[in-house]
Length: 483
Ligand code: GLU
Image (tube, rainbow, N blue to C red):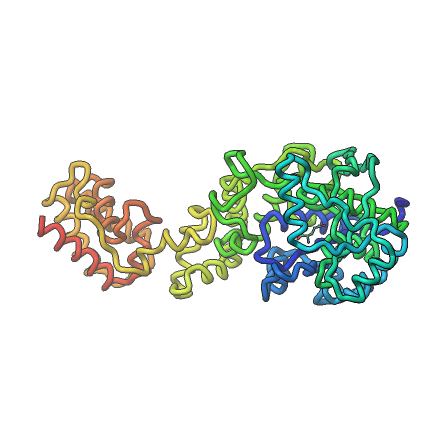
């Protein structure tokens, strides 16, 4: 490939379910590489596996990509010079290349029944052989083939792998990879329903769509020799490939799994992670800038990204690190920018409540869904174990007077918006009675919130209102009187 060729990258989602967070990482790298080189980034939908198709999945995948702040130059929704971008709308296109492969003796009809293939596999397994098609149909005569076709015997079309050949392939991440063709199956290119498999469709499309670089998960490495051979038969030049190691779970034992939390791209957004923070975190899961820097905007990343700096080591999906990034990005936002996020996660809160909560809570959360638990006491009735009121040298009488006097103080107030003034009043009350400040507020907090840890407690009165605050304190009194 000449270096002057336009850089065109692609992501080729299969609409078989939710998009994985790992897909967003791979997509981000493809996107950044294309943008950096003034090239194009393409989305192509690989829906040839009709059995695994999930209705609506394509739309959801496109939507989540946009919600991460990423976009594409050509794709199923916006079209482009190589449209259509959905493989089942391209079936006629593949037909031509299938015929060409058959005519060249590079692909062949296979009429084997599933029973026969099953039996073959059993035999191979028993003999500890590699599961591979035994080429039963490779040398059928033209007459036999025609007879079967005339009799409408179901068939698949297989790629004929050359034998005893070492295929050497240069991966941009892993360097040289070698395959012995004897270890590679005669891949099915067209299924019995006439629809091509991934291998044929992706290979043809990468070529026709002029894809120059393919960055993808390394679970696809095994398809390279098949694509390599197919391209050679067709006289095409392969795109350059970079296979990226997939994420590991935090314990480093095995592929990232649901055991440690959510894995779909959408669910991270639903949990209240910011797209910018997620992208920044993902940038570093497989790439580094070569120095200590960690904070990158998408624009910075587009400038800095280098294929040579992609890692070969499997990155660990460290959720604590993601929380750290997200907390950082949350705190960088102005209160005004945070408003819609607070509103989304606290739909029951009024505008004025949200305005009170933002400065109180932005330092205390790592993701917006934390708001739901932290503020639960503001929106729901509280209840708690009486022992929470009677800890650390606070007996029933002392706790009762804490609460009783607090009720009196609150009763006498009309305005709770000036919390500095309110605090002064409470501190005076504490001083007058020679109480211990920490003990007083512990009881007061439990009585108002039902939990021992909350954001600054005096703002609670302003949010829940005088009446509710007094009712909660009265509940504490009645709990105390029953001891
Ligand atoms: N359709 C494949 C997938 O779902 C894409 C594989 C590739 O990038 O070549 O991941």
